[in-house]
Image: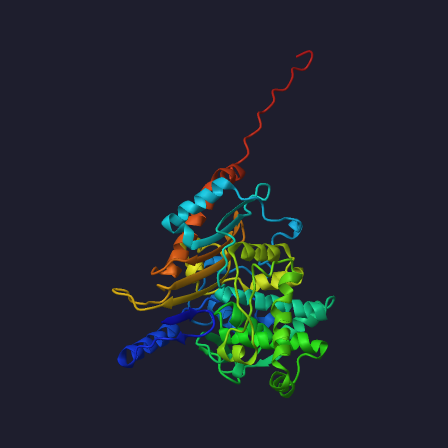
Length: 462
């Protein structure tokens, strides 16, 4: 039996078949990960402020000084235009389920309703927000969506240390040099590193001794979903919560801490970093938990626990981010910017209907195959388990926000291409929401009727 992951953990090959069949399976796994596409985030005008190298490349492509594929309109918002939208609605909670809206969502899922957990919050008309969920409390492994919780841990730790000093938080993210070490083993996700001196864009998996700022590691984790970056940030999050204002610590001190601290204490420190912020930010740890590292070496060095989430808990998390309640407004805003898709769109975000929309997105998958007559195991087609998870905020069109909604989607439809299924659902949901708001938007955009011209009263003596 095989477990394949795209965006989380490692490949576990438990197949007992010997010889050529086993070699073919190993080759298939290698090809699968080599072909895994990337999606990139953060507004592309933010190179100078963040130091994220790939943003300079993209900015130069957009202004024509470097060759490359330009981005769709939805990916071109500036840093100032990418913001949290519900700071004036901090008391808002999820509305009661709209029965008619729920029925429409179920119709989009067809005969696979039982295989989905879906939550949709339509914020396009804030006088009448709508909410629907289908199997909203069914818990599954969140995959790489759990990396949002790692980011939450980083921002929470920084806020705890520097509650009134945003520049100090920014300085640590921008100026702290992080060196990749054995915690990154193993991961095949490629990241983009910009060799500014030689003007060369390097695409490859992170390797031991690679260097980058904390901001770059956050970008590598959030955008191409690098497990190596997530493991490195989890390690540094533990150091941050352990050493406080003495962070960053030397490599010698870091190695000594992980080598000589009792395993139980390391486990407690991991939980303090990635589980405590969940409850502190008003979420239910029984409904959403990232329990462990994203790499094999990280899990070996620090024992964690299981990870799970429901579509409703992911919705509550995303709503808090839009409200500025994810730690605080600064942290919420920066996390949303980290999720802003500014390059190749995949899975849910790749729906053509969203091309002109700003999309803030994270996804993750986990699938498992076992031998079955007339079945060939392919990427995202598991016949034992075929998890695909998507979290998306959609603002459409970008910059105008005539439509604004959040969707969290968790599926386990066997033997089907789950990436395509999420893309298809994205198009259908977008059209459904467009149709619902069309009368209101047409009324709002219609020119005001000309006022009748009053006939002047006759003047006495005329």
